[in-house]
Length: 319
Ligand code: APR
Image (tube, rainbow, N blue to C red; front, side):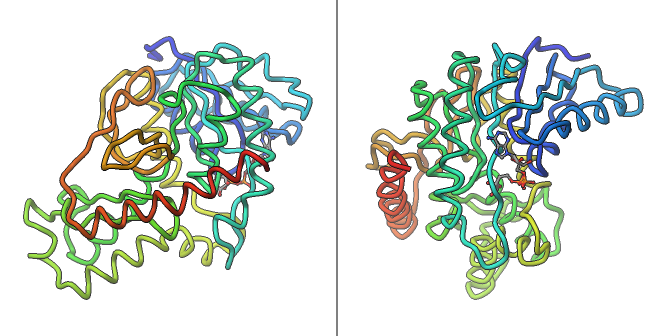
């Protein structure tokens, strides 16, 4: 099918990037998925492999693999992308926090963002490299793009982890559970129990407070739990699912409301920071931030998250 006529580029062909490219191609709504990496032959090999899966999976989207150089060579193949997903950067090792990656990944993400701005000046950019809130802010800075067009992926993933945790604890299908997390993709993540329900009933009617607290904690440490088990590398199935859904919402101009890392400009009484909130996603990126009623403690948590990431986001300008 491949119907939207859109071109999406995924920068970084590691675990996160390659699974994102696979999901995007299998949606069969893009004309082209470009996959890039600095490791020679890796994106080309993965693209060939993905294209060979087309007759079996039944999709027409063409996957193009390109090795890029640190001088920007190869980026011509990404030119005119409607959407660019940046996954380039190191993942965590066991015991590391996402913030431990900031210096290394800032250099990588900055150089990628500059090339993206040069070759795809009209793109919506979805950032997934960690530490997420800071790398999103850095990408906005380095591209010079309108902030509505630079979005980070974290909230959908954290929310999915929360939903999975609740569904398992309550022994119900994931489809009957609604949860929400806002704030940062890290220690100041804000799970929002007031927005959570199981089969339409408030979460507090279904699980006791101690259990909810335990699930909130597990959600906050959801990424570290996977890293500790894998020992090398970090999660990518759920993260790529979230990033790909965001890209699809942009490609289809769907107006879907999802928790994303976006520029907050007065909503919830917070301004001038990239933060995880709900937003309506369309062809131009974020159409608008969607505010909801939060409890006092949830709002306090969101403001604390904003304060924590604000200082770090200012620091990345110098990295
Ligand atoms: N341009 C393109 N690709 C790059 C660049 C660059 N400048 N620098 C590094 N890469 C590539 C690496 O060669 C590697 O193939 O990025 C890829 C990263 O892949 P993995 O090591 O498998 O890491 P992954 O699990 O995909 O995570 C990527 O997402 O969730 C975050 O914390 C995670 O920051 C990490 C990112």
